[in-house]
Image 1: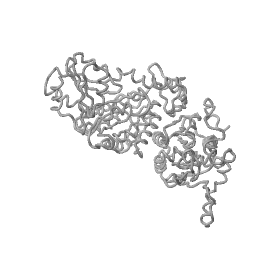
Image 2: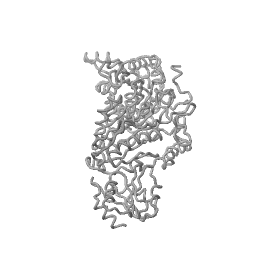
Image 3: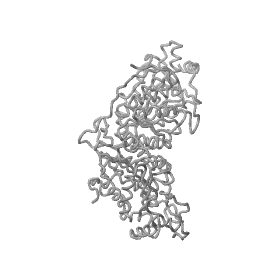
Image 4: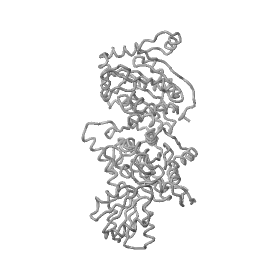
Length: 262
Length: 366
């Protein structure tokens, strides 16, 4: 078991559905925490509202489960008041990109020294599968019964543009790469944003011909393309298959950051 | 050595916060409260604190709550539109019992209204503005001196009762300049620490749990969901919700006498003004001018929790007159506690009642 001392076992059973990818993301994040050798007394997990945001409730540290969309603003207060704390934010696509979009870009702009892990399952899972700002065009959800008609946000690119010092994207399939990315993010001063494309078989897959967990994971895996390959194909003018998204490290830089441990 | 200065109300509020040990301010510029943020931006870094201009008022109060959980005294200041934006997280602060201070320099509303004009239009919003049942504490200064004194007091009450506490001022007092005395130090009472062996939301007889800020090794899970004494979500059990929310309300309401702060003038009077904030200054002027013992004055410095027992200080009262800078808000609270007629004297538009207006009311209703 990864980081057993960090689990609130008395909170079991958890709320996640069978086949949910969020547990994988929590595991990878805790593996990174273990790699960092952080102390529980100095670590704070913060989240907003949604399936992703229930994660801090299962972790044995001080934690703030806040209001919908506002996790990064709360986390900014924690970190700016006490830079010696390690601050990790769990969020989801609805929490971060819809209701919390403004806080997202401003936290990246400020480059507050914290790690933000976004479980992007392309859907509002907790409320039963409504279309979110990352629902791919054409995808079926309870509020896009004829297929999503809006363009989707690319969260990682948004974080790069807004100024975060470290941005990576992986999937719930790529557990080793994801763990390494979260670790690198934690090591990088400034805001580290790690987007994780993850499966919601219950509320996304079910409506999109991806009924089983393996089918969903395989779909995500097969549409992920290393950013280096993507850039090479693009430079060579070669076609990119539809539905492809990049994975890997999108940026690592050392712009001025706020709230760095004194 | 204290110092006496001619200063602005908003500056005195910031000075009070600094004196009270406030070391975190998260805010967003809004007229007529901005001088508080400006003063904190200038002063806090030199005092070892943190000033941060957030992206909006939702973020401001969120950052303040986050900072408060690290154990620092934290504050924000705003006005009507920003106050409205803060409502959801104010409910979160009430639910999670986060000590913090919210200053509202009230202006004319609704909506953008009158940015540079005074009002007392948010008096019910500060009590009932977030969804669900909860209680809060609200203080109402009427002078620059009280902008200092009551800000200090707001921090103590917030810590003691673990509740978001409001300084409900307005454009008149916030922008007024008069003499104020700033003491070198003020006495500060920190929140009671969470006792060894106690659960994070296990309250004693007073209904207030001890506080274990982040970093104290108690590993507190803070959630706005209905939670048990461990702080763990328990969102469907009717008894768990009843127990928690009833305690959140009762811990404040049962301490009404303790929290109450008011001034009584001429308790034998037959005609009694009830005021809070700057309309009290006009009443004081009328009473100075007329030297008439049949006029009484109850001035509230704490309006929430409402101290209904203060009305009993006037056993001979035949009528209560209540000038407010709104269409009649706190007057409803007075009306439901007394049998005598309670006359609302509303005034909106941004100016104080004139002495002549109050004299006309006196003559009409006495």
